[in-house]
Image (cartoon, rainbow over all chains, first blue to last red; front, side, top):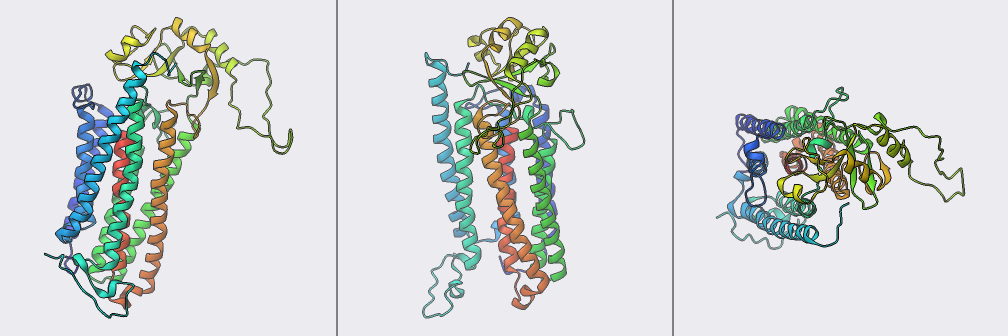
Length: 116
Length: 342
């Protein structure tokens, strides 16, 4: 809770360690691009991209929960902020990416050439 | 439940909610949370729009590894990812010092809060400076390219398929084209900076060097190989930009209309125009957040030094500005993923 006065220094450094390791793994994967992951496809994205997105969400979790101290807030505040964000973002992303891909297929299958 | 309704009748002090703490958070902190939520939705709107454009041009979008390759003092060496990884570490570390400042504030240690706030500000400044450098490289460009009449970008590669600069092959022709400026004509007439080489010089240089090939925007795959004409038989790799045969390259180079060096909001040498637009807009908007975060941090830092929060017996302001700072870090984590990794 907001009113405790104990030191959380150890946890802060642990979280920093986790965030650093995840970033290093991401950068390593981004440079190496292992073929098995990069040349695959799951729901219109390759596995490497899915791994990046999941690792990013893990990082986001640690930043919000540990650094922004969301874990110490009441359940109602937590839900008001986190759920609102997550649901709206998921919805928006789904709609826009689906539509974007649809526009792509229209361009691709059209009789008029657009990129020449 | 902490969300019990709190009533607060007849209290004069209304600006801070009269001390009422719905959801167990003080007025200022809760408002910061809701500001962050709305700001997060704004950013996700931008990033989702980026995703829309990227899926719309999924076969031709620029490959980030080929765009952001610079590292300080490493001229000519292609080092994708390293610099932006460094920036990410700077920002994460400044988040750590910020949360340490908040932690020291809980224990009412003025000196420690001041030191950690100071380190956070330094981290923020390094980050903004790095971003400026990244922008500089992006705007300046490295290789140069030509844009065709159809609006697509053609880059040049050597016989091994490695990209080469216009300066490496462009011919020098006895033609002269003066930069139009306000001092040369009427006061209201000017034009954007002329590229180093004219279209004719690039085409002539290309024709004289039989080894040079053209690389298009299309990302090579079994799918795109079917409908792209004249793909080079040996140089192409899956998930890399398509390289054309010499015959096809000679045909395509005649379509050249403009020579492009670097990037601006209208066109860029890396490929899709929207790529540069979104890069400038999203990293710019994020950079502006970092900048305003630094300014707010400085204000709070001065207040810490003056002992304002000692007298108030509470370092909650540090906590609130900390929330904002972590949010900026959070956004960067996503920008990093979607611009550089994915």
